[in-house]
Length: 199
Image (cartoon, rainbow, N blue to C red; front, side):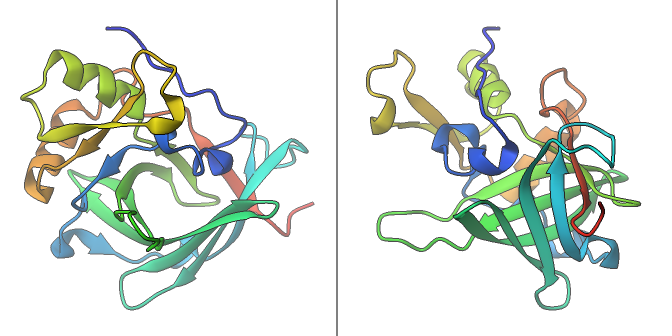
């Protein structure tokens, strides 16, 4: 399978590049899967590696409680910030985060994104579902998961200027993640966070 690579400076900045997100019309969680962990609350800074003292820092992730089993998450870098409703959930003994943008601009459709939680403490380590993997897999296996291909007008000069938008319901999404979540390339490299008050 041809590998699509989204070249980005940091995960935070990728939020503003439409092709770098896996988008789903439906959430990846059901209400019974939800859980709340106080360990996520706070402001975190992305680091380039597992070294908590790394000086090579990128965007910030700020989690606050939002209701009984949800968070508000603000991710940004400099003047660029986006707000999400975040839900932590468990599936098959593993933990995940579902992000839903608060963006309600005209002509925009709110989309769900999926992250795998490798660990919560002492600091979160997350992996994002790789949109390139889904794009390649569904090109070869178009009936494996309900979706459509959306044209990207900002990349009209590129041969494959489209992104995949998942339309499968939550049950089908969860079944697919359980089946393929261990496949090579399904998740991006880990995003290591550290508390923003650490020197």
